[in-house]
Image (spheres, one colour):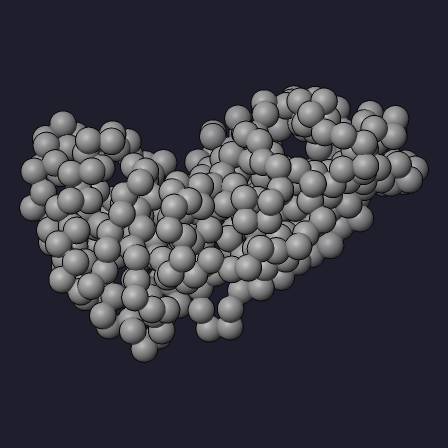
Length: 340
């Protein structure tokens, strides 16, 4: 393999959180970070980082069209036109705040998802908007035109007050009103009453984001993608790149990749621990990465099986090659040294 890039959002907790906990023993990761060429990046949203990795420019004053991209994965028929995500969420009232909980905070079976989507479909139909629910957790709106609107990806709002992230732009009053109307319908839904009676989180809102039409097929350097996440799957499909499910360990990536390839791996599942300040979950995540991903990387680089390694987080980039490990005088730093 010529080049391996690991994009790992949530690799580090915030400075406040990581300083207050016992960090698991991670000698392999710490050595990689110590020897690497480190570059501080302008903080990116998760979706913006993926767009950049696939050489897709975000339109000025508009959303990255995540809905059109992920719909390639969920339903690749009739992809033309303008699409917006309307993902089912659970909102928690906290005094004057409304905290958004994404699908990692509740389970939704196919029957309930279809019924809830049907309950709200008429609201959208009255406005000439078609609602589709091809999956339980990703719903789509088919729009007649590009809205004059800027929204915030759901990954950036999770476990935060939605009032800080409401849609902005000339069309924002319409979309805020529409959100309020569907919240009232969902509040009265028999499915939600049943969920609450069973002590389950109600699906009491949707989150609008990612509006736009499918961008042109990008040209990028990746020959292969391994991922656990759907936006990157859609981007790989758009770019015509081979895409596989995220394996359990680094060795599987190496075995399934050819010499000379530039491989991208997206490990997104640890992001939720940072979002929800789940300290124990993050500790388990880092321990898993150390054992199954980082512990074998130095050997691969030294042996020439991997020419260059890049590790990306939301705001940092680390690059290593064989020469990096000659920096024997550098002392390992704790993971808290890399937190923001």
